[in-house]
Image 1 (cartoon, one colour):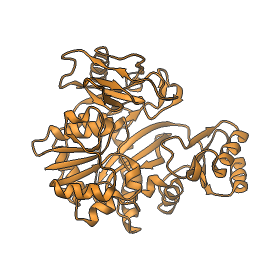
Image 2 (cartoon, helix red, strand yellow):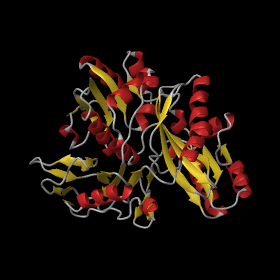
Image 3 (cartoon, helix red, strand yellow):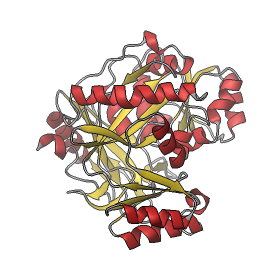
Image 4 (cartoon, one colour):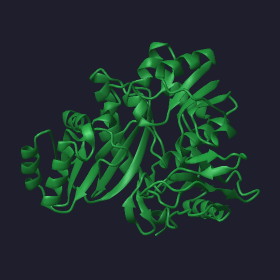
Length: 419
């Protein structure tokens, strides 16, 4: 089957690479793709949702997979389904689980799904009063989408009140901050749990852990993610069972009962406190770089998994996963502070193998066809193996065969699993 992938990062590259291993996969189109995705398919310069749907019809596309949250919150899935096109991703109504933190928190409250104590408000006075009722540190979140930057962990009451004031005034995040969620800080460890669902049935993928801080040792600023590994020993069968029964199942059932069935991938950001899972946030798409590790583990046909989820037939699918995977993000010199100068990428001949390979993200082609590092997160080096240590070693061996001026990466991805 021909497949259209919406997006341009390593996440979309990873999905395409998994699809290409499946003999049922036909031609892959990327909208818009990046400077390396033409190695796997064809890039198309179409952004309008109606035009993309018409392109899918004209090119016999049987499945569309949406990588990022913005098209989903803006209703791309609704437009495709109105034209009887199979699309992997939730409706705009269901995508509110990520598009509005207030909606998400209120949904959790309505359905008695464990989450931190919170207040959602547009009133600065109410925000200040609630802040004063909590013990620092205090979490202040802009309600809308802020490209992963709308969350402040304030260490003092004054910092929390200032953050709320800046958001509500529009100074910090514009309209996305006109409503805020203030919540208690949870002290535990984070997990990323992904459930593929068709709105009724679901499959939970192997557990993941990502690394948000820029620098080795969990130092430096937060980023979009500097690496991930899967599975994590921090999530045993008992904990995953709790997540399934207390979080994933009531969320899917609750969305269906509220008239917005959730289809696609539900990304549960979990904080584990005293071995009890508590929802930090939901996302309505794969995480990046968690997706890169998960796609490396998939050992059954990718088209089968994505297509049956999209058409409401997930009950017939029993996906298989193998071994372990570690993904290390290679970023440009000035990431995440500002853009970097384009730099030519050199990769040693024969560097990649079935067990270690590159997933490209922030890259473009130069005038002579050379590959240039032009984005913040440039690529992800993937290593796979029977265990985390073997996978980690392969990922870092591969990095030793990649060079470009200013490249940076963490040297401790998966350290939690190898303590």
